[in-house]
Image (cartoon, rainbow, N blue to C red):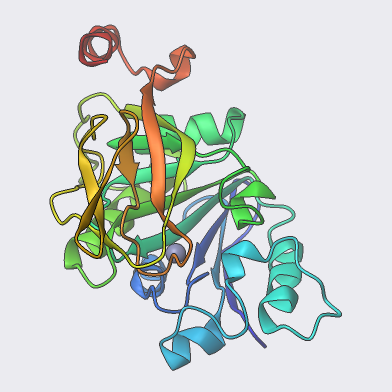
Length: 282
Ligand SMILES: [Zn+2]
């Protein structure tokens, strides 16, 4: 078996936690280990360690990036094509799906969504992440969350303890709000979520070296130095917020360019106070 799947509880809601779509991102496996210590009082939890073979080898993938392999193909010779097909069968009846990632960059505390629907809006409201990034399916094609009603969380660096703690905390908070567990220490309401939307990729020229002063989610202005080719500076042609800039796993792109947006749906806004707060910030 290429994925490790466990189930606990039954009925609704059915929550699926997907970890290790990338075998070098162990945080999801650690989160899953902790989730099984919880007492589930309602619904069912299914956990999927997606790419077990890559995880064992400590590599991102075996044949190709699993999170660029959906919907997959059971007859393919490529390991990840088969796994992708198999995972989609496993998540068919899920009500909620959270897919856990980590990064080699300083990108932190972001929930990535591909679209909006009732389940996704509900997960955002319950988890209340610091940032939501709408990344349409034109970016990261063939990713798992293009094929289901799910969200990806990208909370920090691969090996940072903080990434693990925050990912676990937010999934527990979601489970609490779904009535699946009883949590004593529910997180205090955070300040309003910042909303972003990817509008382009930053393609990576040959021999490009990133400017170390570029930080993810810190606004880049037109004319800023993005990096260097040999010693020649490469300048930004427009204003944008960098996301996943400098990710080592990306070969052809530096990262993504996003703009700040305002979600119009009141579902994102928890109270009159935070609504005013959010409007002021944006
Ligand atoms: Zn990943």
